[in-house]
Image (tube, rainbow, N blue to C red; front, side, top):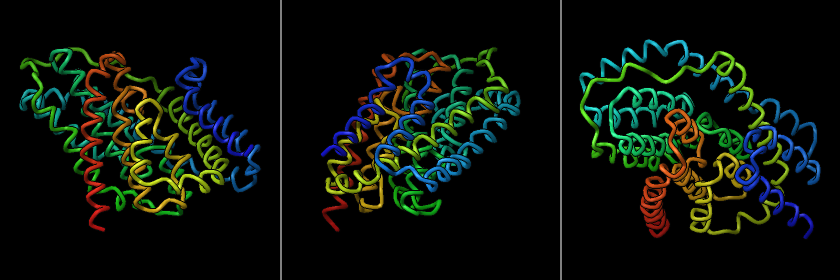
Length: 342
């Protein structure tokens, strides 16, 4: 009984802490590392194997963030020039639609952060109404969030999930592939109907990230965050294995709509384990991927895009929740149909 209480308090802390407490929000990576280590110690899961995993598991994602971030920083001026030329040739709606599709699929390999940065750079070059700019960004972030579910490079928590499942790099592609392909497309289609103004591109671009941010701060935060997720996941694993697998896939799907306000990496790392069936894993992960686009706080690319374009939480909430609900209903209908015919 005490174990369940401690687990419940830990989950409440990691879910609500970054939302309600400003110092935690500003230092969320250190918070997760601290609470992950404490949880592992209290639950008697802290050992040499966990330390080794916490040191090694973050490396691949961290290196990807560093390499692609540095590459984007080096090519920034060239990409600006290329985008300006493309803008003169293509209708803005076609350009943003194509970018949302392409960057959605690339998010699984170049990380959602870089995908979001590229889209923001493109849309910042267009003279369009504020509402259209916000809407296009929200729809693109839904697409990028979907695409992030194809590989462990797309989301820090997925690397932790695959380690616990003892699965290979392409496991998520096999599990979610058709849903992700359709999801990216459906999320991007509304961009084609937005009222973009037709005019020359702007003369200014977004301020560049400093090399210190690209090479040290951002990769360092990612490393610490994933290390904390590894410790937290392993610490809670016994309780999760004992209880979560009993929940039906439909309940897991809708329960994970909490991802709209909580970073989905956190929930994935804590929740997905070998005790879940493939259908349960699929439902839980799809609920996370879709809901993550509903609000600014739900996903890393949302936060990056909103910060760069000055999109407020209220502006995002005018579009995100409605889009998320529609995608959730469509996805759930397909999942129920699959379960009916199995």
